[in-house]
Image (cartoon, helix red, strand yellow):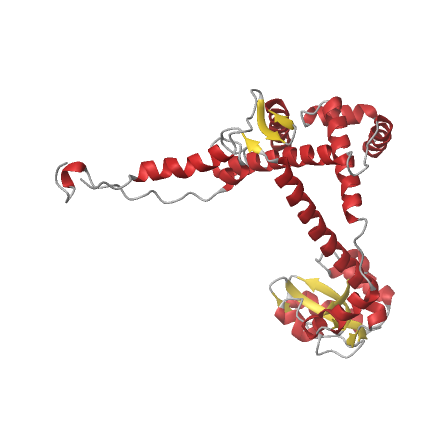
Length: 350
Protein backbone atom coordinates (compact mmCIF):
# COMPACT_ATOMS: atom_id res chain seq x y z
CA UNK A 1 0.00 0.00 0.00
CA UNK A 2 1.03 3.67 -0.36
CA UNK A 3 2.48 4.99 2.89
CA UNK A 4 3.22 8.53 4.01
CA UNK A 5 6.24 9.59 6.06
CA UNK A 6 5.39 9.85 9.75
CA UNK A 7 5.92 13.13 11.60
CA UNK A 8 8.63 11.45 13.66
CA UNK A 9 10.53 10.37 10.54
CA UNK A 10 10.24 13.83 8.99
CA UNK A 11 11.61 15.36 12.17
CA UNK A 12 14.49 12.88 12.20
CA UNK A 13 15.42 13.83 8.63
CA UNK A 14 15.30 17.56 9.42
CA UNK A 15 17.64 17.06 12.37
CA UNK A 16 19.92 14.77 10.39
CA UNK A 17 20.69 17.29 7.64
CA UNK A 18 22.74 19.73 9.78
CA UNK A 19 24.38 16.81 11.55
CA UNK A 20 25.53 15.38 8.26
CA UNK A 21 26.72 18.83 7.12
CA UNK A 22 28.87 19.13 10.22
CA UNK A 23 30.03 15.54 10.36
CA UNK A 24 33.56 16.48 9.40
CA UNK A 25 34.01 18.34 12.68
CA UNK A 26 33.29 17.06 16.16
CA UNK A 27 33.21 18.53 19.63
CA UNK A 28 35.82 16.69 21.70
CA UNK A 29 35.13 15.37 25.18
CA UNK A 30 35.30 18.06 27.84
CA UNK A 31 34.24 20.82 25.42
CA UNK A 32 30.93 22.52 24.69
CA UNK A 33 31.86 23.91 21.28
CA UNK A 34 34.45 23.50 18.55
CA UNK A 35 35.40 26.95 17.22
CA UNK A 36 37.79 27.16 14.29
CA UNK A 37 40.89 25.24 15.31
CA UNK A 38 40.10 25.55 19.02
CA UNK A 39 37.43 24.70 21.55
CA UNK A 40 35.40 26.23 24.37
CA UNK A 41 35.73 23.92 27.33
CA UNK A 42 33.09 22.73 29.75
CA UNK A 43 35.27 24.11 32.56
CA UNK A 44 35.19 27.61 31.04
CA UNK A 45 31.41 27.44 30.90
CA UNK A 46 31.08 26.04 34.43
CA UNK A 47 33.34 28.74 35.89
CA UNK A 48 31.21 31.57 34.50
CA UNK A 49 27.96 29.86 35.46
CA UNK A 50 29.21 29.57 39.04
CA UNK A 51 30.17 33.23 38.99
CA UNK A 52 26.67 34.11 37.78
CA UNK A 53 25.16 32.14 40.66
CA UNK A 54 27.38 33.99 43.14
CA UNK A 55 26.37 37.36 41.68
CA UNK A 56 22.69 36.50 42.06
CA UNK A 57 23.27 35.46 45.67
CA UNK A 58 25.22 38.63 46.52
CA UNK A 59 22.50 41.06 45.42
CA UNK A 60 19.93 41.97 48.02
CA UNK A 61 16.39 41.69 46.72
CA UNK A 62 17.52 40.00 43.51
CA UNK A 63 15.29 37.22 42.12
CA UNK A 64 16.26 33.62 42.76
CA UNK A 65 18.74 32.06 40.37
CA UNK A 66 16.81 30.54 37.43
CA UNK A 67 15.99 26.86 37.71
CA UNK A 68 17.82 24.61 35.28
CA UNK A 69 15.62 23.90 32.29
CA UNK A 70 13.60 27.11 32.63
CA UNK A 71 13.49 29.67 29.82
CA UNK A 72 15.42 32.13 32.00
CA UNK A 73 18.15 29.55 32.66
CA UNK A 74 18.43 28.74 28.95
CA UNK A 75 18.72 32.47 28.14
CA UNK A 76 21.56 32.79 30.65
CA UNK A 77 23.20 29.61 29.36
CA UNK A 78 23.00 30.88 25.77
CA UNK A 79 24.52 34.26 26.70
CA UNK A 80 27.48 32.55 28.41
CA UNK A 81 28.08 30.31 25.40
CA UNK A 82 27.92 33.31 23.03
CA UNK A 83 30.39 35.23 25.20
CA UNK A 84 32.88 32.36 25.28
CA UNK A 85 32.54 31.60 21.58
CA UNK A 86 33.06 35.26 20.68
CA UNK A 87 36.18 35.35 22.84
CA UNK A 88 37.50 32.27 21.01
CA UNK A 89 36.80 33.83 17.61
CA UNK A 90 38.49 37.08 18.61
CA UNK A 91 41.53 35.27 19.97
CA UNK A 92 41.92 33.19 16.82
CA UNK A 93 41.77 36.26 14.55
CA UNK A 94 43.87 38.63 16.67
CA UNK A 95 47.25 37.56 15.29
CA UNK A 96 46.08 37.96 11.69
CA UNK A 97 44.98 41.50 12.56
CA UNK A 98 48.32 42.23 14.22
CA UNK A 99 46.75 42.57 17.66
CA UNK A 100 48.32 41.30 20.88
CA UNK A 101 47.75 41.75 24.62
CA UNK A 102 50.85 41.13 26.74
CA UNK A 103 51.18 40.08 30.36
CA UNK A 104 52.46 43.59 31.06
CA UNK A 105 49.25 45.05 29.59
CA UNK A 106 47.17 42.83 31.87
CA UNK A 107 49.37 43.69 34.88
CA UNK A 108 48.80 47.39 34.31
CA UNK A 109 45.04 46.99 34.00
CA UNK A 110 44.99 44.78 37.09
CA UNK A 111 46.83 47.49 39.04
CA UNK A 112 44.27 50.07 37.86
CA UNK A 113 41.43 47.86 39.10
CA UNK A 114 43.08 47.50 42.50
CA UNK A 115 43.34 51.30 42.71
CA UNK A 116 39.68 51.70 41.74
CA UNK A 117 38.54 49.19 44.37
CA UNK A 118 40.76 50.71 47.05
CA UNK A 119 43.19 47.96 47.99
CA UNK A 120 44.20 44.39 47.17
CA UNK A 121 42.39 43.22 50.31
CA UNK A 122 39.15 44.81 49.16
CA UNK A 123 39.61 43.32 45.71
CA UNK A 124 40.10 39.85 47.18
CA UNK A 125 36.95 40.28 49.28
CA UNK A 126 34.98 41.32 46.21
CA UNK A 127 36.36 38.44 44.15
CA UNK A 128 35.46 35.97 46.88
CA UNK A 129 31.92 37.33 46.98
CA UNK A 130 31.64 36.93 43.21
CA UNK A 131 33.27 33.46 43.25
CA UNK A 132 36.10 34.65 40.99
CA UNK A 133 39.79 33.80 41.43
CA UNK A 134 42.57 36.23 40.62
CA UNK A 135 43.62 34.04 37.71
CA UNK A 136 40.07 34.06 36.34
CA UNK A 137 39.97 37.83 36.68
CA UNK A 138 43.23 38.13 34.76
CA UNK A 139 41.82 35.88 32.03
CA UNK A 140 38.71 38.04 31.80
CA UNK A 141 40.80 41.22 31.71
CA UNK A 142 42.94 39.78 28.92
CA UNK A 143 39.88 38.69 26.91
CA UNK A 144 38.25 42.11 27.26
CA UNK A 145 41.44 43.97 26.30
CA UNK A 146 41.90 41.73 23.28
CA UNK A 147 38.28 42.27 22.25
CA UNK A 148 38.72 46.06 22.56
CA UNK A 149 41.94 45.96 20.53
CA UNK A 150 40.39 43.86 17.76
CA UNK A 151 37.41 46.20 17.63
CA UNK A 152 39.75 49.15 17.22
CA UNK A 153 41.33 47.36 14.24
CA UNK A 154 37.91 46.71 12.72
CA UNK A 155 36.97 50.36 13.28
CA UNK A 156 40.23 51.70 11.84
CA UNK A 157 38.79 52.67 8.44
CA UNK A 158 35.39 53.76 9.71
CA UNK A 159 34.82 57.50 9.50
CA UNK A 160 32.04 60.03 9.04
CA UNK A 161 32.59 63.06 6.83
CA UNK A 162 31.10 66.52 7.26
CA UNK A 163 29.14 65.90 4.05
CA UNK A 164 27.52 62.78 5.54
CA UNK A 165 26.66 64.69 8.68
CA UNK A 166 25.15 67.53 6.62
CA UNK A 167 23.07 65.06 4.63
CA UNK A 168 21.71 63.67 7.91
CA UNK A 169 21.01 67.18 9.22
CA UNK A 170 19.15 68.20 6.03
CA UNK A 171 16.96 65.08 5.98
CA UNK A 172 13.41 66.25 6.87
CA UNK A 173 12.84 63.04 8.82
CA UNK A 174 15.56 64.11 11.27
CA UNK A 175 14.46 67.74 11.66
CA UNK A 176 12.73 67.19 15.00
CA UNK A 177 16.04 66.14 16.59
CA UNK A 178 17.40 69.65 16.15
CA UNK A 179 14.37 71.55 17.39
CA UNK A 180 14.65 72.63 21.02
CA UNK A 181 11.38 73.40 22.78
CA UNK A 182 10.93 76.32 25.12
CA UNK A 183 12.18 75.51 28.60
CA UNK A 184 11.40 77.19 31.90
CA UNK A 185 13.56 77.43 34.98
CA UNK A 186 11.25 76.80 37.90
CA UNK A 187 11.17 76.57 41.66
CA UNK A 188 8.39 75.46 43.95
CA UNK A 189 7.29 74.87 47.51
CA UNK A 190 5.42 71.60 48.07
CA UNK A 191 3.14 71.19 51.09
CA UNK A 192 0.69 68.59 52.29
CA UNK A 193 -2.22 71.01 52.78
CA UNK A 194 -3.62 74.07 51.05
CA UNK A 195 -3.43 76.02 54.32
CA UNK A 196 0.34 75.44 54.54
CA UNK A 197 0.73 76.42 50.88
CA UNK A 198 -1.10 79.69 51.53
CA UNK A 199 1.19 80.44 54.49
CA UNK A 200 4.24 79.79 52.32
CA UNK A 201 2.78 82.01 49.58
CA UNK A 202 2.22 84.86 52.02
CA UNK A 203 5.85 84.76 53.12
CA UNK A 204 7.12 84.60 49.55
CA UNK A 205 5.00 87.58 48.50
CA UNK A 206 7.04 89.79 50.84
CA UNK A 207 10.00 89.47 48.42
CA UNK A 208 9.11 87.11 45.53
CA UNK A 209 12.47 87.17 43.75
CA UNK A 210 14.71 86.82 46.81
CA UNK A 211 16.75 83.62 46.75
CA UNK A 212 17.25 84.02 50.50
CA UNK A 213 13.51 84.13 51.15
CA UNK A 214 12.89 81.13 48.92
CA UNK A 215 15.52 79.13 50.80
CA UNK A 216 13.98 80.05 54.15
CA UNK A 217 10.43 79.22 53.04
CA UNK A 218 11.48 75.95 51.33
CA UNK A 219 13.38 74.85 54.43
CA UNK A 220 10.38 75.63 56.65
CA UNK A 221 7.45 74.39 54.56
CA UNK A 222 8.51 72.19 51.63
CA UNK A 223 8.05 68.43 51.79
CA UNK A 224 9.95 67.81 48.54
CA UNK A 225 13.24 66.14 49.62
CA UNK A 226 14.86 66.84 46.27
CA UNK A 227 14.44 70.62 46.39
CA UNK A 228 13.81 71.47 50.06
CA UNK A 229 17.45 72.35 50.71
CA UNK A 230 17.94 74.10 47.36
CA UNK A 231 15.38 76.88 47.70
CA UNK A 232 12.83 74.83 45.77
CA UNK A 233 14.90 74.91 42.55
CA UNK A 234 13.71 72.38 39.94
CA UNK A 235 15.96 73.37 37.04
CA UNK A 236 14.85 73.89 33.44
CA UNK A 237 11.98 71.85 31.97
CA UNK A 238 10.11 71.77 28.64
CA UNK A 239 6.33 71.72 28.55
CA UNK A 240 4.70 68.34 29.09
CA UNK A 241 7.26 66.81 31.44
CA UNK A 242 5.57 67.56 34.78
CA UNK A 243 2.25 66.24 36.06
CA UNK A 244 -0.58 68.00 34.13
CA UNK A 245 -1.77 70.23 37.00
CA UNK A 246 1.74 71.53 37.69
CA UNK A 247 2.60 71.80 33.99
CA UNK A 248 -0.48 73.85 33.11
CA UNK A 249 0.10 76.31 35.95
CA UNK A 250 3.83 76.70 35.33
CA UNK A 251 3.47 77.42 31.61
CA UNK A 252 0.78 80.02 32.27
CA UNK A 253 2.99 82.12 34.56
CA UNK A 254 5.00 85.20 33.70
CA UNK A 255 8.63 85.29 34.81
CA UNK A 256 8.87 85.95 38.60
CA UNK A 257 5.10 85.63 39.03
CA UNK A 258 3.96 83.49 41.99
CA UNK A 259 1.22 80.95 41.38
CA UNK A 260 -1.77 80.46 43.62
CA UNK A 261 -1.73 77.10 45.45
CA UNK A 262 -1.83 74.32 42.82
CA UNK A 263 -3.15 70.86 43.72
CA UNK A 264 -1.41 67.81 42.23
CA UNK A 265 -1.17 64.12 43.21
CA UNK A 266 1.90 65.07 45.30
CA UNK A 267 0.27 67.82 47.35
CA UNK A 268 -0.02 71.60 47.06
CA UNK A 269 2.52 73.69 45.11
CA UNK A 270 3.52 77.31 45.02
CA UNK A 271 5.35 77.74 41.70
CA UNK A 272 7.56 80.45 40.27
CA UNK A 273 9.21 80.64 36.83
CA UNK A 274 12.58 82.37 37.13
CA UNK A 275 13.64 82.33 33.47
CA UNK A 276 12.37 81.29 30.04
CA UNK A 277 14.57 79.95 27.24
CA UNK A 278 12.67 80.35 23.95
CA UNK A 279 12.25 77.52 21.49
CA UNK A 280 15.02 77.42 18.92
CA UNK A 281 16.49 75.28 16.17
CA UNK A 282 20.09 74.14 16.28
CA UNK A 283 22.30 75.15 13.40
CA UNK A 284 24.35 72.55 11.56
CA UNK A 285 27.54 73.86 13.18
CA UNK A 286 25.96 73.42 16.63
CA UNK A 287 24.74 69.90 15.87
CA UNK A 288 27.59 68.65 13.64
CA UNK A 289 29.84 66.99 16.22
CA UNK A 290 26.98 65.14 17.92
CA UNK A 291 25.68 63.98 14.53
CA UNK A 292 29.11 62.73 13.50
CA UNK A 293 29.59 60.90 16.79
CA UNK A 294 26.14 59.27 16.56
CA UNK A 295 26.66 58.19 12.94
CA UNK A 296 30.15 56.94 13.79
CA UNK A 297 28.80 54.69 16.57
CA UNK A 298 26.18 53.30 14.19
CA UNK A 299 28.72 52.67 11.43
CA UNK A 300 31.16 51.07 13.87
CA UNK A 301 28.42 48.77 15.18
CA UNK A 302 27.60 47.71 11.61
CA UNK A 303 31.26 47.12 10.79
CA UNK A 304 31.69 44.97 13.91
CA UNK A 305 28.56 42.93 13.19
CA UNK A 306 29.73 42.28 9.63
CA UNK A 307 33.26 41.32 10.74
CA UNK A 308 31.98 39.03 13.48
CA UNK A 309 29.50 37.36 11.11
CA UNK A 310 32.27 36.56 8.60
CA UNK A 311 34.64 35.37 11.33
CA UNK A 312 31.89 33.19 12.80
CA UNK A 313 31.14 31.60 9.43
CA UNK A 314 34.84 30.97 8.89
CA UNK A 315 35.12 29.30 12.31
CA UNK A 316 32.51 26.64 11.36
CA UNK A 317 31.25 26.36 14.93
CA UNK A 318 29.85 23.05 16.15
CA UNK A 319 28.10 22.84 19.52
CA UNK A 320 27.83 19.95 21.92
CA UNK A 321 24.30 18.73 22.57
CA UNK A 322 22.37 21.23 24.67
CA UNK A 323 24.72 24.18 24.07
CA UNK A 324 23.58 25.66 20.75
CA UNK A 325 22.46 29.23 21.66
CA UNK A 326 19.90 29.32 18.84
CA UNK A 327 18.21 26.15 20.08
CA UNK A 328 18.39 27.35 23.69
CA UNK A 329 16.56 30.59 22.93
CA UNK A 330 14.16 29.31 20.25
CA UNK A 331 10.45 29.58 20.92
CA UNK A 332 8.89 26.16 21.45
CA UNK A 333 7.16 24.80 18.34
CA UNK A 334 3.63 23.40 18.54
CA UNK A 335 3.52 19.61 18.66
CA UNK A 336 2.81 18.02 15.24
CA UNK A 337 -0.57 16.42 14.72
CA UNK A 338 -0.57 12.70 15.33
CA UNK A 339 -0.59 10.38 12.34
CA UNK A 340 -3.67 8.18 11.95
CA UNK A 341 -3.16 4.71 13.36
CA UNK A 342 -2.73 1.76 10.97
CA UNK A 343 -6.19 0.44 11.78
CA UNK A 344 -7.73 3.83 11.00
CA UNK A 345 -5.96 4.22 7.66
CA UNK A 346 -8.33 4.56 4.68
CA UNK A 347 -5.85 2.46 2.69
CA UNK A 348 -6.87 -0.63 4.59
CA UNK A 349 -4.21 -3.39 4.45
CA UNK A 350 -0.93 -4.06 2.66
